[in-house]
Image (spheres, rainbow, N blue to C red):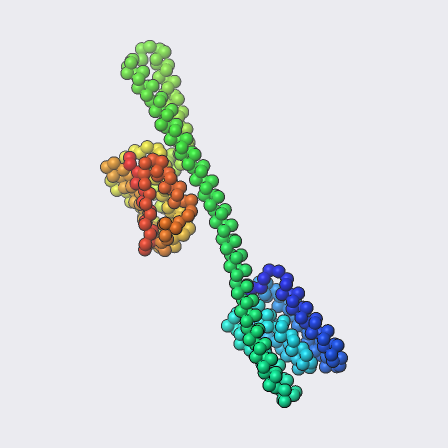
Length: 371
Protein backbone atom coordinates (compact mmCIF):
# COMPACT_ATOMS: atom_id res chain seq x y z
CA UNK A 1 0.00 0.00 0.00
CA UNK A 2 1.19 3.52 -0.61
CA UNK A 3 2.20 5.60 2.38
CA UNK A 4 0.90 9.08 3.23
CA UNK A 5 2.23 11.85 1.05
CA UNK A 6 3.93 13.61 3.97
CA UNK A 7 7.28 12.79 5.52
CA UNK A 8 6.12 11.90 8.99
CA UNK A 9 6.89 8.19 8.67
CA UNK A 10 10.45 8.95 7.54
CA UNK A 11 11.01 11.22 10.53
CA UNK A 12 9.48 8.63 12.86
CA UNK A 13 11.61 5.78 11.46
CA UNK A 14 14.88 7.73 11.60
CA UNK A 15 14.07 9.09 15.08
CA UNK A 16 13.44 5.60 16.51
CA UNK A 17 16.62 4.22 14.93
CA UNK A 18 18.64 7.20 16.21
CA UNK A 19 17.23 6.78 19.73
CA UNK A 20 18.05 3.07 19.77
CA UNK A 21 21.55 3.79 18.43
CA UNK A 22 22.17 6.38 21.16
CA UNK A 23 20.93 3.98 23.85
CA UNK A 24 23.19 1.27 22.42
CA UNK A 25 26.26 3.52 22.64
CA UNK A 26 25.43 4.60 26.19
CA UNK A 27 24.47 1.17 27.51
CA UNK A 28 27.10 -1.11 26.03
CA UNK A 29 30.08 0.55 24.37
CA UNK A 30 31.86 -2.52 23.00
CA UNK A 31 32.91 -4.11 19.68
CA UNK A 32 29.52 -5.80 19.45
CA UNK A 33 27.80 -2.44 19.72
CA UNK A 34 29.76 -1.28 16.67
CA UNK A 35 28.34 -4.18 14.66
CA UNK A 36 24.83 -3.31 15.90
CA UNK A 37 25.35 0.35 14.98
CA UNK A 38 26.50 -0.67 11.51
CA UNK A 39 23.28 -2.68 11.08
CA UNK A 40 21.23 0.29 12.24
CA UNK A 41 22.98 2.62 9.81
CA UNK A 42 22.39 0.16 6.98
CA UNK A 43 18.67 0.09 7.87
CA UNK A 44 18.39 3.88 7.59
CA UNK A 45 20.35 3.97 4.34
CA UNK A 46 18.32 1.12 2.81
CA UNK A 47 15.05 2.81 3.78
CA UNK A 48 15.90 6.26 2.45
CA UNK A 49 17.57 5.14 -0.79
CA UNK A 50 15.47 2.14 -1.86
CA UNK A 51 12.59 1.46 0.50
CA UNK A 52 11.04 4.92 0.66
CA UNK A 53 10.76 5.35 -3.16
CA UNK A 54 9.00 1.98 -3.35
CA UNK A 55 6.56 3.05 -0.62
CA UNK A 56 5.82 6.39 -2.31
CA UNK A 57 5.06 4.66 -5.61
CA UNK A 58 2.92 2.07 -3.85
CA UNK A 59 4.92 -0.81 -5.30
CA UNK A 60 3.63 -3.84 -3.36
CA UNK A 61 5.73 -6.27 -5.36
CA UNK A 62 8.71 -8.59 -5.07
CA UNK A 63 11.16 -5.69 -4.75
CA UNK A 64 9.27 -4.28 -1.74
CA UNK A 65 9.15 -7.71 -0.11
CA UNK A 66 12.90 -8.27 -0.63
CA UNK A 67 13.77 -4.84 0.77
CA UNK A 68 11.56 -5.50 3.79
CA UNK A 69 13.16 -8.91 4.39
CA UNK A 70 16.56 -7.21 4.24
CA UNK A 71 15.40 -4.70 6.85
CA UNK A 72 14.18 -7.49 9.12
CA UNK A 73 17.51 -9.32 8.67
CA UNK A 74 19.43 -6.17 9.64
CA UNK A 75 17.17 -5.70 12.67
CA UNK A 76 17.80 -9.30 13.81
CA UNK A 77 21.54 -8.80 13.26
CA UNK A 78 21.50 -5.77 15.55
CA UNK A 79 19.39 -7.66 18.12
CA UNK A 80 21.81 -10.59 18.05
CA UNK A 81 24.71 -8.30 18.97
CA UNK A 82 22.88 -5.96 21.35
CA UNK A 83 19.54 -7.15 22.86
CA UNK A 84 18.59 -3.54 23.60
CA UNK A 85 18.02 -2.94 19.89
CA UNK A 86 14.80 -5.00 20.00
CA UNK A 87 13.19 -1.62 20.74
CA UNK A 88 13.52 -1.12 16.98
CA UNK A 89 10.27 -3.08 16.69
CA UNK A 90 8.53 0.28 17.15
CA UNK A 91 9.97 1.30 13.76
CA UNK A 92 10.05 -2.07 12.00
CA UNK A 93 6.39 -3.00 12.54
CA UNK A 94 4.94 0.15 10.89
CA UNK A 95 7.46 -0.36 8.07
CA UNK A 96 6.10 -3.87 7.47
CA UNK A 97 2.56 -2.58 7.01
CA UNK A 98 3.75 0.14 4.63
CA UNK A 99 5.70 -2.15 2.33
CA UNK A 100 3.56 -5.29 1.93
CA UNK A 101 -0.17 -6.09 1.77
CA UNK A 102 -2.05 -6.92 4.95
CA UNK A 103 -2.14 -10.67 4.22
CA UNK A 104 1.67 -10.74 4.30
CA UNK A 105 2.18 -8.09 6.95
CA UNK A 106 0.47 -9.95 9.81
CA UNK A 107 2.57 -13.15 9.51
CA UNK A 108 5.75 -11.07 9.15
CA UNK A 109 4.90 -9.12 12.33
CA UNK A 110 4.44 -12.38 14.23
CA UNK A 111 7.73 -13.77 12.94
CA UNK A 112 9.62 -10.52 13.57
CA UNK A 113 8.45 -10.49 17.19
CA UNK A 114 9.18 -14.17 17.70
CA UNK A 115 12.77 -14.26 16.40
CA UNK A 116 14.23 -11.91 19.07
CA UNK A 117 12.64 -14.15 21.71
CA UNK A 118 14.43 -17.15 20.20
CA UNK A 119 17.71 -15.23 20.23
CA UNK A 120 17.19 -14.25 23.85
CA UNK A 121 16.30 -17.82 24.77
CA UNK A 122 19.61 -19.04 23.39
CA UNK A 123 21.37 -16.32 25.39
CA UNK A 124 19.47 -16.60 28.71
CA UNK A 125 16.93 -19.50 28.80
CA UNK A 126 15.74 -18.75 32.33
CA UNK A 127 14.14 -15.42 31.38
CA UNK A 128 12.12 -16.72 28.45
CA UNK A 129 8.72 -16.39 30.18
CA UNK A 130 8.93 -12.63 30.47
CA UNK A 131 10.22 -12.38 26.91
CA UNK A 132 7.26 -14.37 25.59
CA UNK A 133 4.78 -12.12 27.41
CA UNK A 134 6.49 -9.00 26.06
CA UNK A 135 6.60 -10.45 22.54
CA UNK A 136 2.90 -11.35 22.70
CA UNK A 137 1.95 -7.83 23.80
CA UNK A 138 4.24 -6.35 21.17
CA UNK A 139 2.72 -8.54 18.45
CA UNK A 140 -0.86 -7.65 19.42
CA UNK A 141 -0.03 -3.95 19.65
CA UNK A 142 1.87 -4.09 16.37
CA UNK A 143 -1.02 -5.71 14.52
CA UNK A 144 -3.45 -3.16 15.95
CA UNK A 145 -1.13 -0.35 14.91
CA UNK A 146 -0.77 -1.89 11.45
CA UNK A 147 -4.52 -2.16 11.02
CA UNK A 148 -4.84 1.49 12.01
CA UNK A 149 -2.09 2.45 9.55
CA UNK A 150 -3.78 0.41 6.82
CA UNK A 151 -7.15 2.03 7.45
CA UNK A 152 -5.59 5.50 7.57
CA UNK A 153 -3.87 4.98 4.24
CA UNK A 154 -7.04 3.60 2.66
CA UNK A 155 -9.03 6.61 3.87
CA UNK A 156 -6.38 8.97 2.50
CA UNK A 157 -6.48 7.22 -0.85
CA UNK A 158 -10.29 7.22 -0.89
CA UNK A 159 -10.35 10.94 -0.09
CA UNK A 160 -7.84 11.66 -2.84
CA UNK A 161 -9.89 9.62 -5.34
CA UNK A 162 -13.09 11.36 -4.24
CA UNK A 163 -11.55 14.80 -4.60
CA UNK A 164 -10.27 13.93 -8.07
CA UNK A 165 -13.68 12.53 -9.05
CA UNK A 166 -15.51 15.59 -7.73
CA UNK A 167 -13.12 17.91 -9.57
CA UNK A 168 -13.61 16.01 -12.82
CA UNK A 169 -17.39 15.91 -12.30
CA UNK A 170 -17.51 19.65 -11.60
CA UNK A 171 -15.46 20.43 -14.70
CA UNK A 172 -17.70 18.19 -16.81
CA UNK A 173 -20.83 19.76 -15.35
CA UNK A 174 -19.52 23.25 -16.04
CA UNK A 175 -18.67 22.28 -19.62
CA UNK A 176 -22.08 20.70 -20.22
CA UNK A 177 -23.79 23.63 -18.53
CA UNK A 178 -21.97 26.08 -20.75
CA UNK A 179 -22.66 24.11 -23.92
CA UNK A 180 -26.30 23.60 -22.97
CA UNK A 181 -26.68 27.29 -22.14
CA UNK A 182 -25.19 28.34 -25.46
CA UNK A 183 -27.34 25.83 -27.35
CA UNK A 184 -30.48 26.87 -25.45
CA UNK A 185 -29.86 30.54 -26.18
CA UNK A 186 -29.21 29.85 -29.86
CA UNK A 187 -32.37 27.76 -30.06
CA UNK A 188 -34.36 30.44 -28.26
CA UNK A 189 -33.13 33.15 -30.63
CA UNK A 190 -33.83 30.95 -33.65
CA UNK A 191 -37.34 30.29 -32.37
CA UNK A 192 -37.98 33.96 -31.63
CA UNK A 193 -36.80 35.00 -35.08
CA UNK A 194 -38.84 32.27 -36.74
CA UNK A 195 -42.01 33.02 -34.76
CA UNK A 196 -41.82 36.81 -34.95
CA UNK A 197 -39.76 38.31 -37.78
CA UNK A 198 -40.11 35.49 -40.29
CA UNK A 199 -43.82 35.06 -39.64
CA UNK A 200 -44.30 38.83 -39.72
CA UNK A 201 -42.58 39.23 -43.10
CA UNK A 202 -44.62 36.33 -44.48
CA UNK A 203 -47.82 37.98 -43.29
CA UNK A 204 -46.80 41.31 -44.84
CA UNK A 205 -46.15 39.65 -48.20
CA UNK A 206 -49.45 37.74 -48.05
CA UNK A 207 -51.49 40.83 -47.14
CA UNK A 208 -49.92 43.02 -49.84
CA UNK A 209 -50.41 40.37 -52.53
CA UNK A 210 -53.99 39.89 -51.42
CA UNK A 211 -54.61 43.61 -51.82
CA UNK A 212 -52.79 43.90 -55.18
CA UNK A 213 -52.14 40.44 -56.69
CA UNK A 214 -50.44 41.87 -59.76
CA UNK A 215 -48.38 44.34 -57.72
CA UNK A 216 -49.15 47.07 -60.20
CA UNK A 217 -48.38 49.70 -57.62
CA UNK A 218 -44.61 50.16 -57.66
CA UNK A 219 -44.54 51.08 -54.00
CA UNK A 220 -46.36 47.87 -53.06
CA UNK A 221 -44.01 45.88 -55.30
CA UNK A 222 -41.03 47.49 -53.55
CA UNK A 223 -42.55 46.66 -50.16
CA UNK A 224 -42.98 43.01 -51.19
CA UNK A 225 -39.40 42.79 -52.47
CA UNK A 226 -38.10 44.34 -49.26
CA UNK A 227 -40.22 41.99 -47.14
CA UNK A 228 -38.99 38.98 -49.14
CA UNK A 229 -35.36 40.06 -48.76
CA UNK A 230 -35.81 40.45 -45.02
CA UNK A 231 -37.66 37.11 -44.86
CA UNK A 232 -34.68 35.48 -46.55
CA UNK A 233 -32.33 37.18 -44.11
CA UNK A 234 -34.36 36.02 -41.11
CA UNK A 235 -34.44 32.44 -42.44
CA UNK A 236 -30.67 32.60 -42.92
CA UNK A 237 -30.31 33.73 -39.31
CA UNK A 238 -32.51 30.85 -38.14
CA UNK A 239 -30.39 28.43 -40.16
CA UNK A 240 -27.17 29.88 -38.74
CA UNK A 241 -28.46 29.51 -35.20
CA UNK A 242 -29.67 25.96 -35.80
CA UNK A 243 -27.33 22.95 -35.55
CA UNK A 244 -25.04 22.68 -38.58
CA UNK A 245 -26.09 19.05 -39.02
CA UNK A 246 -29.58 20.25 -39.98
CA UNK A 247 -28.29 22.86 -42.40
CA UNK A 248 -27.25 20.32 -45.02
CA UNK A 249 -29.46 17.35 -44.19
CA UNK A 250 -32.95 16.41 -43.11
CA UNK A 251 -33.64 15.37 -39.53
CA UNK A 252 -33.57 11.59 -40.31
CA UNK A 253 -30.26 12.00 -42.15
CA UNK A 254 -28.78 14.08 -39.32
CA UNK A 255 -29.83 11.52 -36.68
CA UNK A 256 -28.50 8.68 -38.83
CA UNK A 257 -25.14 10.44 -39.03
CA UNK A 258 -25.07 10.72 -35.24
CA UNK A 259 -25.74 6.98 -34.93
CA UNK A 260 -23.02 6.15 -37.47
CA UNK A 261 -20.55 8.47 -35.75
CA UNK A 262 -21.36 6.85 -32.39
CA UNK A 263 -20.57 3.40 -33.83
CA UNK A 264 -17.30 4.61 -35.35
CA UNK A 265 -16.09 6.33 -32.19
CA UNK A 266 -17.21 3.75 -29.61
CA UNK A 267 -17.07 0.51 -31.58
CA UNK A 268 -20.57 -0.35 -30.34
CA UNK A 269 -23.10 -1.30 -33.07
CA UNK A 270 -25.85 1.31 -33.32
CA UNK A 271 -28.87 0.65 -35.56
CA UNK A 272 -31.16 3.39 -36.84
CA UNK A 273 -34.57 3.22 -38.46
CA UNK A 274 -37.38 5.57 -39.38
CA UNK A 275 -41.07 4.72 -39.18
CA UNK A 276 -44.05 6.60 -40.54
CA UNK A 277 -44.16 9.19 -43.28
CA UNK A 278 -41.26 11.62 -43.09
CA UNK A 279 -42.41 15.22 -43.21
CA UNK A 280 -40.97 18.69 -42.71
CA UNK A 281 -40.93 19.74 -39.07
CA UNK A 282 -40.63 23.16 -37.45
CA UNK A 283 -36.99 24.09 -36.94
CA UNK A 284 -37.30 24.17 -33.17
CA UNK A 285 -38.74 20.63 -33.08
CA UNK A 286 -35.97 19.27 -35.31
CA UNK A 287 -33.33 20.93 -33.15
CA UNK A 288 -34.76 19.45 -29.93
CA UNK A 289 -34.93 15.94 -31.41
CA UNK A 290 -31.41 16.10 -32.82
CA UNK A 291 -30.00 17.44 -29.56
CA UNK A 292 -31.80 14.69 -27.63
CA UNK A 293 -30.29 12.02 -29.89
CA UNK A 294 -26.81 13.52 -29.49
CA UNK A 295 -27.06 13.76 -25.71
CA UNK A 296 -28.55 10.27 -25.32
CA UNK A 297 -25.80 8.67 -27.41
CA UNK A 298 -23.16 10.65 -25.51
CA UNK A 299 -24.56 9.32 -22.22
CA UNK A 300 -24.50 5.75 -23.56
CA UNK A 301 -20.86 6.16 -24.61
CA UNK A 302 -19.82 7.62 -21.23
CA UNK A 303 -21.81 5.52 -18.77
CA UNK A 304 -23.77 2.56 -20.17
CA UNK A 305 -21.06 0.01 -21.10
CA UNK A 306 -23.52 -1.24 -23.72
CA UNK A 307 -22.90 -3.83 -26.44
CA UNK A 308 -25.74 -2.71 -28.75
CA UNK A 309 -27.73 0.50 -29.22
CA UNK A 310 -30.80 1.23 -31.34
CA UNK A 311 -32.25 4.58 -32.37
CA UNK A 312 -35.81 4.98 -33.66
CA UNK A 313 -37.32 8.11 -35.21
CA UNK A 314 -41.05 7.68 -35.61
CA UNK A 315 -43.38 10.04 -37.46
CA UNK A 316 -46.87 9.61 -35.99
CA UNK A 317 -50.08 11.28 -37.09
CA UNK A 318 -49.83 14.22 -34.69
CA UNK A 319 -46.39 13.88 -33.12
CA UNK A 320 -42.80 12.80 -33.65
CA UNK A 321 -41.20 10.16 -31.45
CA UNK A 322 -37.49 9.59 -30.77
CA UNK A 323 -36.31 6.49 -28.91
CA UNK A 324 -32.74 5.54 -27.93
CA UNK A 325 -32.31 2.09 -26.35
CA UNK A 326 -29.21 0.34 -25.05
CA UNK A 327 -28.48 -2.96 -23.31
CA UNK A 328 -26.01 -1.45 -20.87
CA UNK A 329 -25.77 -1.46 -17.08
CA UNK A 330 -28.68 0.91 -16.53
CA UNK A 331 -29.11 3.44 -13.72
CA UNK A 332 -31.69 4.93 -11.38
CA UNK A 333 -33.36 7.80 -13.30
CA UNK A 334 -34.79 9.26 -10.09
CA UNK A 335 -31.28 9.59 -8.65
CA UNK A 336 -29.68 11.08 -11.76
CA UNK A 337 -28.38 14.58 -11.04
CA UNK A 338 -26.50 15.40 -14.23
CA UNK A 339 -27.35 18.34 -16.43
CA UNK A 340 -27.92 16.17 -19.52
CA UNK A 341 -31.33 14.70 -18.63
CA UNK A 342 -32.65 17.92 -17.11
CA UNK A 343 -31.46 19.85 -20.16
CA UNK A 344 -33.18 17.44 -22.56
CA UNK A 345 -36.36 17.53 -20.49
CA UNK A 346 -36.30 21.34 -20.45
CA UNK A 347 -35.76 21.63 -24.21
CA UNK A 348 -38.55 19.12 -24.90
CA UNK A 349 -40.88 21.06 -22.63
CA UNK A 350 -40.16 24.30 -24.51
CA UNK A 351 -41.78 22.82 -27.63
CA UNK A 352 -44.62 21.07 -25.77
CA UNK A 353 -42.91 17.67 -25.70
CA UNK A 354 -42.12 15.14 -23.00
CA UNK A 355 -39.09 13.06 -22.08
CA UNK A 356 -39.32 9.69 -20.34
CA UNK A 357 -36.50 7.44 -19.18
CA UNK A 358 -36.82 3.80 -18.10
CA UNK A 359 -33.86 1.74 -16.93
CA UNK A 360 -33.94 -1.90 -15.93
CA UNK A 361 -31.90 -4.24 -18.10
CA UNK A 362 -30.49 -1.41 -20.18
CA UNK A 363 -31.94 2.04 -20.65
CA UNK A 364 -34.62 3.49 -22.92
CA UNK A 365 -34.88 7.24 -23.47
CA UNK A 366 -37.95 8.53 -25.33
CA UNK A 367 -38.85 12.02 -26.50
CA UNK A 368 -42.27 12.75 -27.98
CA UNK A 369 -43.16 16.16 -29.42
CA UNK A 370 -46.48 17.22 -30.95
CA UNK A 371 -45.83 18.17 -34.58
